[in-house]
Length: 333
Ligand SMILES: NC(=O)c1ccc[n+]([C@@H]2O[C@H](COP(=O)([O-])OP(=O)(O)OC[C@H]3O[C@@H](n4cnc5c(N)ncnc54)[C@H](O)[C@@H]3O)[C@@H](O)[C@H]2O)c1
Ligand SMILES: O=P(O)(O)OC[C@H](O)CO
Image (cartoon, rainbow, N blue to C red):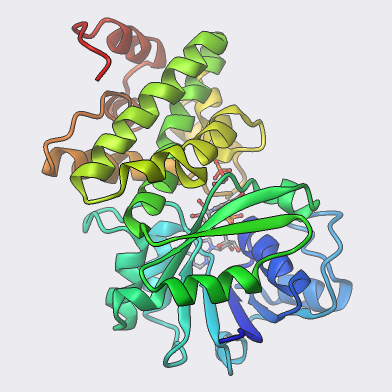
């Protein structure tokens, strides 16, 4: 089915950017913003000054603060609010029957330990093959500036993924399809935690060997968890695994990496939170849910473990580093 009318719910950096991508792909897109002044700026000035200052948004992208208006007639609904707020938001929205529901969020729910697509299917009361996820090396500002980028659209229903792929393909954005929803989602959630650790290392003053060590061993523990949950191990060598991990762990544009850097330089959690001006660093909460998921499945995730303890148990980042390097030596695999 050619998707003509799309609703994007959540007008932060990624929601606004993905709405622009789909509008540039020729679709009519309505973006729901919590605040009326943001909706007004997107529709009238074709800009979201809070999240994407200086980026001209296309004319076929309009915005409203009324979710009913945004959802009216939508054939696909893109969910772009932070992970831990997705359930409560979903319970307020009346989603159109039969629409493909697309999660952009990269996290694991605290308490239930569910992936975002599981939360969507549960709250919306739809089968899992109606839910797709988008995950890959997708730093919003680079895509908003139309820098060449690839991503993965994962859905158990290949045809739905292909429809979304066509509705999201532009001269600067190239989506691939995948049916491994579990692997793509875990790649996206876990890389935020590993990016926090890379930021901490950079904040302490460590260099590229440390960064590469954390990225590579971070990928190893992500793949271990993924395989325990039924993911295809090859997904972790792709865009939603290695691709996203490298981009997020290396880029100063990453909120997670930047947050970790602040902790590494000695800021407290509260100071780092205050400095991020309300923007979401998903790994700060997901490090706890991912750690709990690993414990539930008997998977060893040492980097995630120390990131959780730095963020929530007062462990000093230098101590965390010393603990990791001092672990009992063992074979690589
Ligand atoms: N920014 C990126 O580069 C990027 C790229 C890929 C994926 N993601 C993921 O997309 C999701 C959204 O991230 P973002 O970058 O757009 O975040 P953001 O911080 O830029 O914006 C979040 C949006 O959600 C709204 N919001 C915040 N709390 C809310 C709540 N309780 N209820 C309703 N709305 C709320 C905010 O007003 C804002 O419009 C996250 O899971 C993130 O990991 C982000
Ligand atoms: O800014 P971050 O750390 O949330 O990362 C953004 C994207 O997920 C990168 O793919």
